[in-house]
Length: 122
Length: 111
Image (cartoon, each protein chain N blue to C red):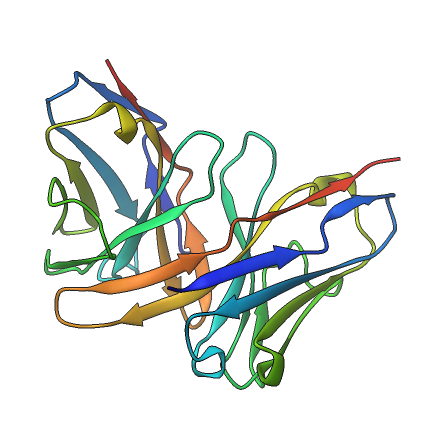
């Protein structure tokens, strides 16, 4: 069974930093592209970052470009999101998401973690 | 610019069907999309991928009453035999060159 477990969420002051982690299990972590998606309270889903399976290619949403940095440690089956210069607008639940997987002509998959709550407040 | 447009809300009676629409912006009308369900106070769950030709492939354990289809720039999610647990937010999502885009979501109410 595929599992993605985020950790590292919490309360941080505006201008502060926080590092989220996501540990994957039940699949060969190094084979898959990964993403971070967040959801502000009462709002919709917002994609914020992508990292390739090897970690060499990374993309970011404009809203976090230059402030957030994604990385991975395939030896530890771990994905990270380093967040800095945080504002109240960064408050929300952060999900790590395994990219689309093709299992067969009739079945595909995309796996979400349970989420980590980040609260930016003074 | 890649934009996905969804109606904010939809409703139908228990046992009836509801069809949700996700509209792709101009220049991206052949994109495949994915549908995700988010039940109240829970994280999202992947439902299916819908291709431009109307074919769809579903995630593990997704009931047969969930189906996908397409017409032009529109991608659809149909939920048949609505049940109370189908009351949720439904998001469509697409991608281009590694960048993901989500629609604003449709809140489905089961009457």
